[in-house]
Image (cartoon, rainbow, N blue to C red; front, side, top):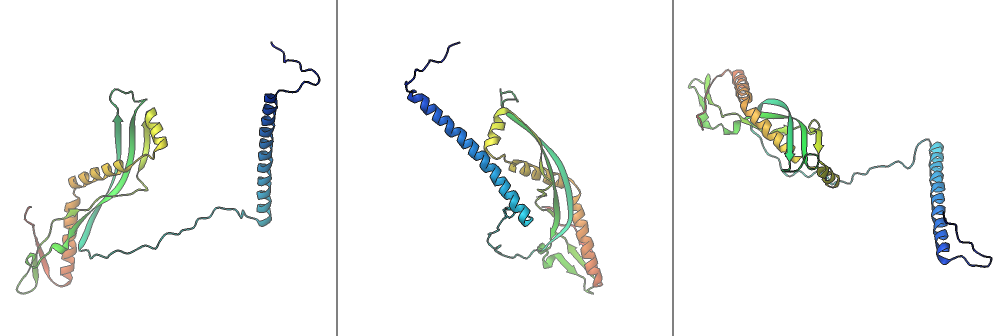
Length: 231
């Protein structure tokens, strides 16, 4: 092993050595100062908390949002007669051709929950759709077909259950906020398809007939329904 060169009495220390020692002393001094300052700040805050019984430096939030602006009010003539509750799990896998899944690709399990309403638009009833008997004791009603409303997803119960990602996708998600809009849109499409295939619209029609039968019955009028023409 080499030995440090001997410095004779009266020989000056090289300038580079002085600079290195000076920088080291500055760094050590800064670290000591930060440590002492940190302990001092903690002790000071602890003392204030003990003095007042609570932390006066608690973070508060101020809401400076503008008042809600009412744009318009619309009259509705829809009778929402039935609602269905849906839950589903989306299993979506995105592959990159020719690249192993561990490098690029993504598989997502997305849990979705929501409802679909079925309604009858009573504003479609015209005078020709209501035929009252001469004695006023019965009426014939041509009821509009029931329709499905847009699915209403419950955001509190819809979430990404798990997600396997390749290295490149993990790096991308670390930089950009992962988008979930595609999963919500796909869940809405599947819920609409399931609602169309169910008995929801028929149930809405039956419930609307029961409502109108009760309403006319309270007036002493017997009601008869006829089917709307197809198309």
